Image 1 (cartoon, chains in turn red, cyan):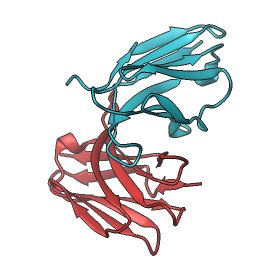
Image 2: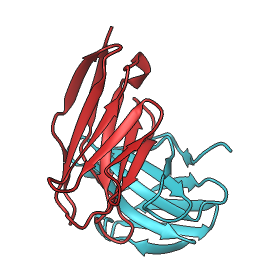
Image 3: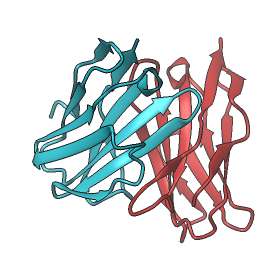
Image 4: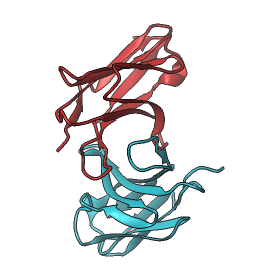
Length: 112
Length: 114
């Protein structure tokens, strides 16, 4: 099955700096990955996704990088803002029929 | 659209009681997921419906848990009997096109079993 983990449980960055949140996965057959943001008391909210036929995908202020060789993906957030404070989850396919396996999450803290 | 709607938002019940969580997916979505979130285990997929049919229930922890989707606009997750270890936040999510696309999550139901 899929095992998805994050390198750091907490990441603290200065407002305005760029943030990089990392994620490793174990199933080399995984072909779909997704990042979610969860604010306190709310459900996860989609940020960006990427399929295994891509190495990079960009959204508004966010970029996801996928390195299939080392089974690693990262979420980059440019010019971090206070509203970016949240827990960020990566998830990958391979957890069963259409099932995504979620990592434990990284808590991003924005310092003023 | 109001998004995925879950009820209740909070539920406190005594051990042994039956608990029913409810979900209304986004209109037009054909896939529905139930997740459980705890500090220890993170976010776990319990069951996945496609076109109202359960496709994968391998995440359902045991027979005390059951889920139904009688129509495209309503689903329930039932725990009977409930146990303290069932305490968690339960999320319902829906999508159009299965699991490998963006899913929209509800606000969750925080369940506490005492």
